[in-house]
Length: 184
Image (cartoon, rainbow, N blue to C red; front, side, top):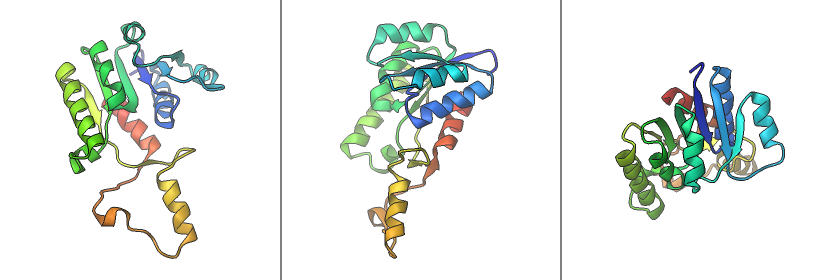
């Protein structure tokens, strides 16, 4: 990936920021976009050698402009938010995030909507890669596994989530980032 440029959308989150770090470690040029400005974020991204840009994915004109000078893009916001970006660069290598629950519980409204979004992305950009991570954990502010571990420390009984029927295979956020980079 040395010498290439990749757009990473959603770098205000832990997975997106980790993707930027992984790409920069490989010598890849990165346009790092975020929707909401946060204190110090642009400076931290610049410090990594990335080009920071504030962008709301709903702004198609800015998205087309940002995607012009890159070979590929990784969109970390959930697919129901990011799917419209597929039409902005259907000829480029694109990676999106969905949920493993679209296969487990396709009749729940939120997962049915994600599955429909996956189908729309595949129609517009058939070469797009859609990752379906499970419970992502390990970053500051992790509300998944960290919450369960706090509850387990307070109780001698370990709760069985979803009566044991739910498939929860926690995945470390850096591993999710690495998978997205490898998918390119």
